[in-house]
Image 1: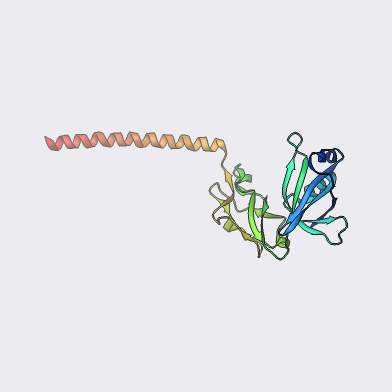
Image 2: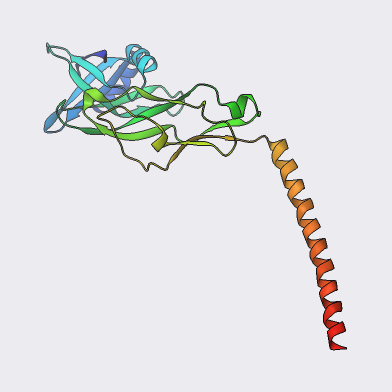
Length: 222
């Protein structure tokens, strides 16, 4: 279920919005396909609370003062303060519930990878978000990807390995890697030393062969 954000019409515009921020008010705008832009303002604390609860990429119901029905919106752009990181302006995009849209959905890794628990490897998440296309009400809050299939350092989880919800189109290559496990650095160094020893052994053997061949050729010539 979408979280609801309460908003009122904003009459303070331009540089004067600085005063609103000082009063704990977040200025913003609502716009959409074929819709005029509307200046709004919302309570900064309420906005942060909702975003922390469901995530910035979620669908929201925005109830504007004087309207009986909420608008279904997505956060299209969020400006933050360079010093504190606090939101200072937000743009909401009002969606058409009957028209597919493109948006970004987070990927959350769940479960335990045997290559981490048994082999002391490090879990690497190669893909944290994915672009999707679907109807607005079908947008998932996030995708959960189970990493229990990562049993060796050679294993990986790709887009094609995940069962995504019906009606949600993934706009990325199926071969794109989502996660894998990196072997411990100590093991990497040990493997490198072993490879070096093998190379030295091969070079030494090749040297013996070369001497033997030369001797044979000399013998044949004589």
